[in-house]
Length: 97
Length: 397
Image (cartoon, each protein chain N blue to C red):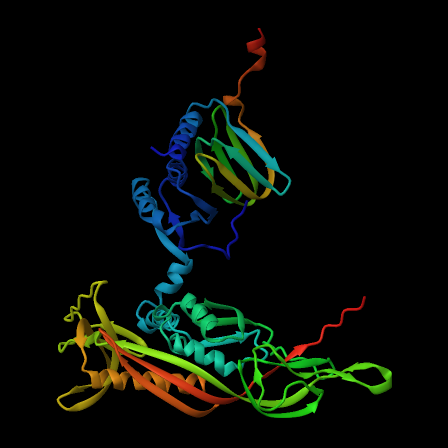
């Protein structure tokens, strides 16, 4: 088997077992989301993504999306805000107790 | 990084999806690692750009999630060319062009000569022509190395030659040697005239210098005939460039021998032929000819050209016929008269080559029969110019 193919499969496996997603925001109005689990809502003004532990709502105008790599998406357009849904977030205080 | 919309690569389609579970459909596409570009939503219609090869898979997924999709736009070279699929001329044209270029590149079309000064271009063109290099020649029909060797052997003025082929162009680069100068003593340099043969002087005309031998004297090879050292009465010796004409009578004997039994090369009555069909300079050998030649065979080869006739009508198609003549060696015993004839021919050849510039006064020939052959002995009496110039070397002590 080709080594490159093996590396891709390993990368895919690693992504499937990931417990966190990462969001990178760049100053050209582009949001890169690594390991997007699902697209919950896709509209012109808002996009809701299901990530590993929470839902993320991206609000803006004329939002567009494209994917790159495995479960990686890029959202661009006139982004106004990014909101996290509290329900999925870990309670750090309880962990401390 | 956003994809530049003007650079769509080979084949991309923009599809639009209405109704159904659009978000789940998008998620499934992302899950299946389908590359999607420029996903947008407008009035409950999602649209995205995908590779044309992924479209059929997308159709299956769309059906699963009850999304009705349709192609909105097609981009890329494939779809651009697809519109011209019925225009065979567009395909055949470039193909014909490529074929023509391929065929034409197999021939020589241009010969460039550089580096010649005294040698004329026509001389070098003629050399190239002899080696099969001329405009229209098939590139595999000649060897540039052969041309280089032949050039150096045939043209004495060449000191270096390079024949290179670049595509359909032949570059002949030459370097000439300095023309060979006959070593003549310059007119201002003092010299003597000495004899080149053992002979008897029969006439002497001195233009400059002092005569050192009289008419009728016997002369040895190397003997001084006209001296360049002249006594200038009161001022002592002066040295001049001796000049004059000295004709002497020389006697020389030559011998020619031929045996009665000689080895002769005799052509066999049966020749062998090969036929080539000519397409321009390109020749194709007929598959029906099968001439086998071993290295030990003594053969000669010549070619004949002609036009192919079909039912008596001359066609523009040419053919080349290669004729192999085989020889065998045999021992031939000649009669005395034949040997004498051959010896006379040898003598005539000798006189034409070596006594060309001399006046033959008499030639006494004598045939001597020996056990195996005949020997011809000729005593020549010739009048020739015997003087050669020799530098005067002055040694001061």
